[in-house]
Image 1 (cartoon, rainbow, N blue to C red):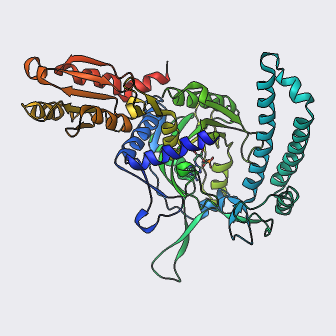
Image 2 (tube, rainbow, N blue to C red):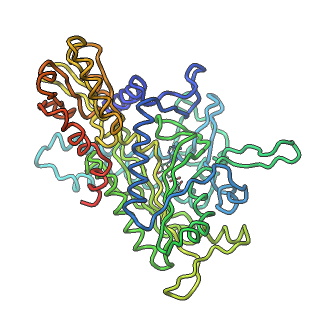
Image 3 (spheres, rainbow, N blue to C red):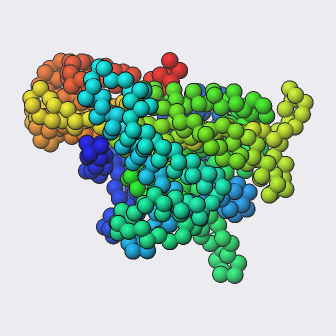
Length: 515
Ligand code: GAP
């Protein structure tokens, strides 16, 4: 666990040191849970967006993209349920004056019990070696059974309190479990209150005429309210999808874990409109397609898992998360939800406008059902970082830090390094960059030893380094070094565009999804 914490801290400082992610407003001591992307971070983020956008709109003939405004009519959030129900239960500790999510305090408590059980099992496995029967141990060991009983009791009370929206019961669980504030160490808790996560502001120039508007907490509603615009102008036939990438804002109570939970973040969402009754088969389709998209990146197939929701939101009839193994456990990166006709029907009700589709094959009109795929761009960025960061010993005994980024996502595709700055090598290197810069993000790096320059490029995940030496002047060849294998090969300068193009293109990555 400590090792994993350590890894997480290293990745956060790597992101800062190499221009990927900076705390927002840092010279003013930062702004909690808000981050800025630096010169390499924004390139990586743009490449992730492009990978998602092209996978949606190029690989699916019936998915188109839009870009709706962040501000929307306030009634939209009433219709969607966000004004009344987009809440987190919060509790304050009276001594430390710190605020917590009541559900997170209980979840952390449950996770600790689980950890105790797992430690007991691991200890016994070590003691008994090959003879160890884990299932039998779990079913008979008194300490494991005690903890399991405790876990189940608290878990049942917790689920009931959440289902019934019972804030008093949530508080009682915290008190009964003797959960203390991590800062003050006391159990001096306030009541539990609901806290709406939407940010509000005012639109209009006069105080009297101003209208309360919200910063959108999800991009999805911009798609729902444009459903008929797109269907009619694009002459779309059900089933079809609308994709969108954009900012979303949530006033998270517990904003922690770097860019995992932010107050301003980006989402990549797609709403797929289908015939009523066909939604569950499309849900399975998108569930499988989205996992293929993740796995094509090559970050490690075993690092992903589905987490099917047992407790469904009132408007959903199926939901699953795609989770990735982060240093702090398996965590949700993307949600796939079968949202029925809830949103469109609510918008019909609140706007008074029909949001129906005439199906020529069935000769009838209906409100389509919707399958949603919703992924956080920043969380995906973090996933890519976790899956790519490595520290490894080299043959010379040094430790190199390398980002094994999927080549199509790498911010810089190649660096051209003249062996020395004299004898015309720098000019030759510049000539190569001048030819390739229309196709790739290239860097010319002349400073320091070749070894140091390789390390710098490894640290930002550049897949290829091209070294220009004296032989290059004689026969127009260079060496090309592969970031992952560190192998070098001599190739003709005229072949560089083809070699690098094939290895780093978005097309090659997109093709992997369908393999
Ligand atoms: N339209 C459905 C929706 O918004 P969600 O599960 O609340 O569903 C979808 O969010 C995805 O957005 C999550 O899987 C996560 O990747 C990302 N996300 C949600 N809240 C976030 C936050 N505070 N910071 C960063 N990413 C967040």
